[in-house]
Length: 294
Image (tube, rainbow, N blue to C red; front, side, top):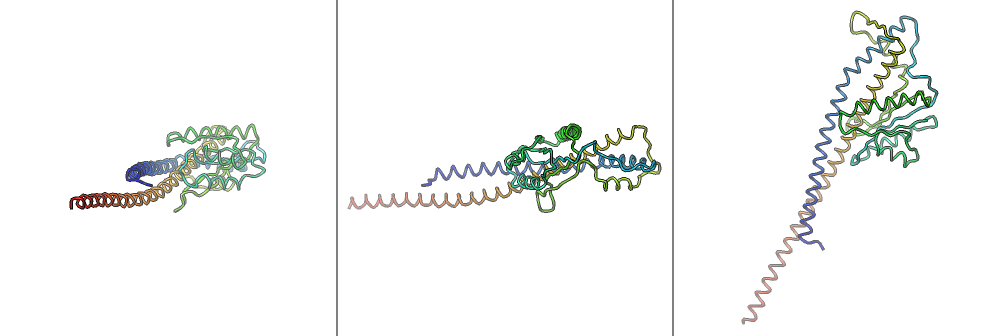
Protein backbone atom coordinates (compact mmCIF):
# COMPACT_ATOMS: atom_id res chain seq x y z
CA UNK A 1 0.00 0.00 0.00
CA UNK A 2 1.36 3.39 -1.01
CA UNK A 3 2.05 5.86 1.75
CA UNK A 4 2.53 9.60 1.71
CA UNK A 5 6.27 9.07 2.10
CA UNK A 6 6.51 6.66 -0.85
CA UNK A 7 4.40 8.96 -3.04
CA UNK A 8 6.56 11.90 -2.08
CA UNK A 9 9.67 9.93 -3.12
CA UNK A 10 8.04 9.00 -6.44
CA UNK A 11 7.20 12.65 -7.12
CA UNK A 12 10.77 13.68 -6.38
CA UNK A 13 12.17 10.97 -8.68
CA UNK A 14 9.75 11.93 -11.45
CA UNK A 15 10.86 15.56 -11.18
CA UNK A 16 14.51 14.55 -11.47
CA UNK A 17 13.80 12.41 -14.54
CA UNK A 18 11.90 15.30 -16.11
CA UNK A 19 14.89 17.57 -15.50
CA UNK A 20 17.19 15.09 -17.28
CA UNK A 21 14.78 14.84 -20.22
CA UNK A 22 14.58 18.62 -20.53
CA UNK A 23 18.38 18.81 -20.55
CA UNK A 24 18.59 16.21 -23.31
CA UNK A 25 15.97 18.13 -25.29
CA UNK A 26 18.03 21.29 -25.05
CA UNK A 27 21.25 19.51 -26.08
CA UNK A 28 19.54 17.89 -29.07
CA UNK A 29 18.03 21.19 -30.21
CA UNK A 30 21.43 22.90 -30.04
CA UNK A 31 23.17 20.00 -31.79
CA UNK A 32 20.69 20.02 -34.68
CA UNK A 33 21.50 23.66 -35.36
CA UNK A 34 25.26 23.05 -35.16
CA UNK A 35 25.20 20.21 -37.69
CA UNK A 36 22.92 22.15 -40.02
CA UNK A 37 25.38 25.04 -39.92
CA UNK A 38 28.31 22.68 -40.55
CA UNK A 39 26.54 21.31 -43.62
CA UNK A 40 25.75 24.79 -44.94
CA UNK A 41 29.35 25.94 -44.39
CA UNK A 42 30.55 23.25 -46.79
CA UNK A 43 28.64 24.62 -49.78
CA UNK A 44 31.40 27.04 -50.80
CA UNK A 45 34.08 24.35 -50.82
CA UNK A 46 31.74 21.98 -52.69
CA UNK A 47 31.33 24.63 -55.38
CA UNK A 48 35.11 24.97 -55.65
CA UNK A 49 35.54 21.20 -56.13
CA UNK A 50 32.81 21.17 -58.77
CA UNK A 51 34.51 24.01 -60.67
CA UNK A 52 37.77 22.08 -60.57
CA UNK A 53 36.08 19.01 -62.05
CA UNK A 54 34.36 21.17 -64.66
CA UNK A 55 37.67 22.69 -65.75
CA UNK A 56 39.33 19.27 -65.96
CA UNK A 57 36.45 17.66 -67.87
CA UNK A 58 36.19 20.52 -70.34
CA UNK A 59 39.93 20.37 -70.97
CA UNK A 60 39.68 16.65 -71.67
CA UNK A 61 36.73 17.20 -73.99
CA UNK A 62 38.67 19.86 -75.91
CA UNK A 63 41.41 17.29 -76.51
CA UNK A 64 38.88 14.69 -77.64
CA UNK A 65 39.16 12.48 -74.55
CA UNK A 66 36.15 10.57 -73.14
CA UNK A 67 34.75 10.85 -69.63
CA UNK A 68 37.35 9.57 -67.17
CA UNK A 69 37.03 6.63 -64.79
CA UNK A 70 36.73 7.88 -61.21
CA UNK A 71 37.57 4.59 -59.51
CA UNK A 72 40.68 2.43 -59.73
CA UNK A 73 40.93 -0.86 -61.51
CA UNK A 74 38.16 -2.38 -59.41
CA UNK A 75 35.88 -5.30 -60.21
CA UNK A 76 32.13 -5.58 -59.92
CA UNK A 77 32.43 -6.03 -56.17
CA UNK A 78 30.59 -3.45 -54.10
CA UNK A 79 30.93 -1.89 -50.68
CA UNK A 80 28.20 -0.37 -48.54
CA UNK A 81 28.78 2.19 -45.79
CA UNK A 82 25.93 2.62 -43.28
CA UNK A 83 25.70 5.56 -40.88
CA UNK A 84 23.87 4.84 -37.62
CA UNK A 85 24.42 6.11 -34.08
CA UNK A 86 26.61 5.40 -31.08
CA UNK A 87 24.04 6.52 -28.53
CA UNK A 88 20.53 5.39 -27.73
CA UNK A 89 17.30 7.17 -26.78
CA UNK A 90 16.69 8.10 -30.42
CA UNK A 91 13.56 6.11 -31.16
CA UNK A 92 13.55 4.02 -34.35
CA UNK A 93 16.52 5.85 -35.87
CA UNK A 94 18.86 2.83 -36.05
CA UNK A 95 16.08 0.42 -36.92
CA UNK A 96 15.11 2.49 -39.97
CA UNK A 97 18.59 2.64 -41.47
CA UNK A 98 19.38 -1.00 -40.64
CA UNK A 99 16.23 -2.21 -42.41
CA UNK A 100 17.15 -0.13 -45.45
CA UNK A 101 20.67 -1.57 -45.37
CA UNK A 102 19.36 -5.14 -45.16
CA UNK A 103 17.35 -4.53 -48.32
CA UNK A 104 20.44 -3.29 -50.18
CA UNK A 105 22.88 -5.95 -49.06
CA UNK A 106 23.31 -8.50 -51.82
CA UNK A 107 25.69 -11.15 -53.07
CA UNK A 108 27.85 -8.53 -54.76
CA UNK A 109 28.30 -6.60 -51.48
CA UNK A 110 31.79 -7.71 -50.54
CA UNK A 111 32.47 -5.14 -47.81
CA UNK A 112 30.17 -3.63 -45.19
CA UNK A 113 31.36 -0.61 -43.25
CA UNK A 114 29.30 0.90 -40.43
CA UNK A 115 29.63 4.25 -38.70
CA UNK A 116 27.96 3.94 -35.31
CA UNK A 117 28.20 1.14 -32.75
CA UNK A 118 24.45 0.61 -32.29
CA UNK A 119 23.76 0.16 -36.00
CA UNK A 120 26.74 -2.23 -36.18
CA UNK A 121 25.33 -4.30 -33.32
CA UNK A 122 21.92 -4.52 -35.02
CA UNK A 123 23.45 -5.65 -38.31
CA UNK A 124 25.58 -8.24 -36.50
CA UNK A 125 22.47 -9.53 -34.70
CA UNK A 126 20.74 -9.80 -38.09
CA UNK A 127 23.51 -12.07 -39.35
CA UNK A 128 25.59 -9.51 -41.28
CA UNK A 129 28.48 -8.38 -39.07
CA UNK A 130 30.30 -5.34 -40.46
CA UNK A 131 33.83 -5.62 -41.79
CA UNK A 132 34.79 -2.23 -40.36
CA UNK A 133 33.21 -0.13 -37.62
CA UNK A 134 33.81 3.59 -37.10
CA UNK A 135 32.70 5.60 -34.10
CA UNK A 136 30.95 8.94 -34.37
CA UNK A 137 32.48 12.11 -32.89
CA UNK A 138 30.85 13.90 -30.00
CA UNK A 139 30.92 17.29 -31.71
CA UNK A 140 31.15 18.98 -35.11
CA UNK A 141 34.90 19.46 -34.69
CA UNK A 142 35.48 15.71 -34.98
CA UNK A 143 33.70 15.25 -38.32
CA UNK A 144 36.70 16.08 -40.53
CA UNK A 145 39.01 13.51 -38.93
CA UNK A 146 36.31 10.81 -39.17
CA UNK A 147 35.77 11.60 -42.85
CA UNK A 148 39.50 11.31 -43.51
CA UNK A 149 39.59 7.92 -41.78
CA UNK A 150 36.70 6.66 -43.91
CA UNK A 151 38.35 7.91 -47.12
CA UNK A 152 41.58 6.10 -46.24
CA UNK A 153 39.59 2.90 -45.64
CA UNK A 154 37.70 3.27 -48.93
CA UNK A 155 41.00 3.74 -50.76
CA UNK A 156 42.29 0.54 -49.14
CA UNK A 157 39.16 -1.34 -50.23
CA UNK A 158 39.58 -0.26 -53.86
CA UNK A 159 43.27 -1.16 -53.94
CA UNK A 160 43.46 -4.30 -51.81
CA UNK A 161 40.00 -5.83 -52.23
CA UNK A 162 39.11 -4.83 -55.78
CA UNK A 163 36.05 -2.81 -54.80
CA UNK A 164 34.65 -1.00 -57.83
CA UNK A 165 31.49 0.55 -56.36
CA UNK A 166 30.96 2.23 -52.98
CA UNK A 167 27.52 3.30 -51.78
CA UNK A 168 26.58 5.32 -48.71
CA UNK A 169 23.35 4.88 -46.74
CA UNK A 170 22.17 7.17 -43.96
CA UNK A 171 19.13 8.86 -42.43
CA UNK A 172 18.23 12.45 -43.08
CA UNK A 173 15.43 14.80 -42.14
CA UNK A 174 12.66 15.25 -44.71
CA UNK A 175 9.65 17.41 -43.98
CA UNK A 176 7.98 16.34 -40.76
CA UNK A 177 9.86 13.01 -40.73
CA UNK A 178 12.96 12.97 -38.53
CA UNK A 179 14.65 9.99 -40.21
CA UNK A 180 14.29 8.98 -43.86
CA UNK A 181 16.87 6.55 -45.33
CA UNK A 182 18.88 8.06 -48.20
CA UNK A 183 21.42 6.37 -50.48
CA UNK A 184 24.30 8.11 -52.25
CA UNK A 185 26.93 6.89 -54.67
CA UNK A 186 30.47 7.57 -53.47
CA UNK A 187 32.41 5.74 -56.16
CA UNK A 188 32.40 5.85 -59.07
CA UNK A 189 31.00 9.32 -59.73
CA UNK A 190 27.90 8.69 -61.88
CA UNK A 191 28.35 9.53 -65.57
CA UNK A 192 25.24 11.72 -65.37
CA UNK A 193 26.96 13.89 -62.77
CA UNK A 194 30.12 14.09 -64.87
CA UNK A 195 28.10 15.14 -67.92
CA UNK A 196 26.33 17.81 -65.88
CA UNK A 197 29.70 19.14 -64.73
CA UNK A 198 31.04 19.02 -68.27
CA UNK A 199 28.10 21.03 -69.57
CA UNK A 200 28.19 23.57 -66.77
CA UNK A 201 29.19 27.06 -67.79
CA UNK A 202 32.34 28.66 -66.45
CA UNK A 203 31.62 31.67 -64.21
CA UNK A 204 34.41 33.82 -65.65
CA UNK A 205 35.50 34.97 -69.11
CA UNK A 206 38.79 33.15 -69.25
CA UNK A 207 39.07 29.41 -68.79
CA UNK A 208 41.55 28.16 -66.18
CA UNK A 209 44.71 26.28 -67.12
CA UNK A 210 46.78 23.88 -65.08
CA UNK A 211 50.11 22.12 -65.37
CA UNK A 212 49.47 19.30 -62.94
CA UNK A 213 49.22 15.79 -64.38
CA UNK A 214 45.61 15.10 -65.38
CA UNK A 215 45.39 11.75 -63.60
CA UNK A 216 46.84 13.12 -60.38
CA UNK A 217 44.54 16.14 -60.51
CA UNK A 218 41.51 13.93 -61.17
CA UNK A 219 42.45 11.65 -58.27
CA UNK A 220 42.79 14.65 -55.95
CA UNK A 221 39.45 16.17 -57.05
CA UNK A 222 37.64 12.84 -56.66
CA UNK A 223 39.08 12.54 -53.16
CA UNK A 224 37.85 16.04 -52.30
CA UNK A 225 34.41 15.19 -53.67
CA UNK A 226 34.40 12.11 -51.42
CA UNK A 227 35.22 14.38 -48.49
CA UNK A 228 32.33 16.72 -49.33
CA UNK A 229 29.76 13.92 -49.81
CA UNK A 230 30.82 12.07 -46.65
CA UNK A 231 30.98 15.21 -44.52
CA UNK A 232 27.56 16.35 -45.69
CA UNK A 233 26.06 12.88 -45.16
CA UNK A 234 27.45 12.70 -41.62
CA UNK A 235 26.14 16.17 -40.79
CA UNK A 236 22.69 15.26 -42.16
CA UNK A 237 22.70 11.93 -40.32
CA UNK A 238 23.68 13.47 -36.99
CA UNK A 239 21.09 16.23 -37.37
CA UNK A 240 18.52 13.50 -38.09
CA UNK A 241 19.67 11.52 -35.04
CA UNK A 242 19.28 14.52 -32.75
CA UNK A 243 15.91 15.40 -34.31
CA UNK A 244 14.71 11.86 -33.63
CA UNK A 245 16.04 12.03 -30.09
CA UNK A 246 14.37 15.42 -29.59
CA UNK A 247 11.02 13.94 -30.70
CA UNK A 248 11.55 10.97 -28.37
CA UNK A 249 12.32 13.29 -25.45
CA UNK A 250 9.23 15.37 -26.20
CA UNK A 251 7.09 12.23 -26.04
CA UNK A 252 8.84 11.18 -22.84
CA UNK A 253 8.25 14.61 -21.32
CA UNK A 254 4.53 14.37 -22.04
CA UNK A 255 4.39 10.91 -20.46
CA UNK A 256 6.31 12.16 -17.42
CA UNK A 257 3.97 15.14 -17.04
CA UNK A 258 0.96 12.80 -17.21
CA UNK A 259 2.55 10.51 -14.64
CA UNK A 260 3.37 13.46 -12.39
CA UNK A 261 -0.25 14.71 -12.58
CA UNK A 262 -1.48 11.25 -11.64
CA UNK A 263 0.94 11.06 -8.73
CA UNK A 264 -0.04 14.54 -7.52
CA UNK A 265 -3.72 13.60 -7.64
CA UNK A 266 -3.01 10.36 -5.78
CA UNK A 267 -0.86 12.22 -3.23
CA UNK A 268 -3.59 14.78 -2.57
CA UNK A 269 -6.22 12.04 -2.21
CA UNK A 270 -3.99 10.03 0.11
CA UNK A 271 -3.20 13.13 2.15
CA UNK A 272 -6.88 13.99 2.46
CA UNK A 273 -7.64 10.42 3.53
CA UNK A 274 -4.88 10.63 6.15
CA UNK A 275 -6.17 13.95 7.48
CA UNK A 276 -9.75 12.63 7.56
CA UNK A 277 -8.67 9.47 9.37
CA UNK A 278 -6.70 11.48 11.94
CA UNK A 279 -9.68 13.80 12.53
CA UNK A 280 -11.96 10.81 12.98
CA UNK A 281 -9.51 9.35 15.49
CA UNK A 282 -9.52 12.63 17.40
CA UNK A 283 -13.31 12.84 17.38
CA UNK A 284 -13.67 9.20 18.39
CA UNK A 285 -11.19 9.69 21.21
CA UNK A 286 -12.97 12.83 22.37
CA UNK A 287 -16.33 11.07 22.35
CA UNK A 288 -14.88 8.12 24.23
CA UNK A 289 -13.38 10.38 26.86
CA UNK A 290 -16.64 12.39 27.10
CA UNK A 291 -18.68 9.23 27.52
CA UNK A 292 -16.55 8.03 30.38
CA UNK A 293 -16.93 11.42 32.06
CA UNK A 294 -20.71 11.14 31.95
